[in-house]
Length: 72
Image (cartoon, one colour):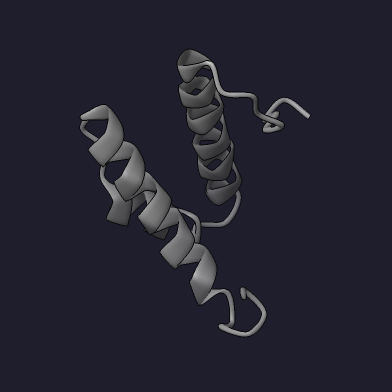
């Protein structure tokens, strides 16, 4: 999808998953800013890592098996 949409899908995906995270946890996160941060050189990699880490923690807390490993 990213290739077909000239990487716009990545921004949409980041926005949508952070929105779902916010709605599920009730934490104060800003999906638009998280999505826009992906486009910032180098910093975007840190945001993607934080995204993976947050979802890994959420899945671990819920007792769901996960193959996400942001440390690799």
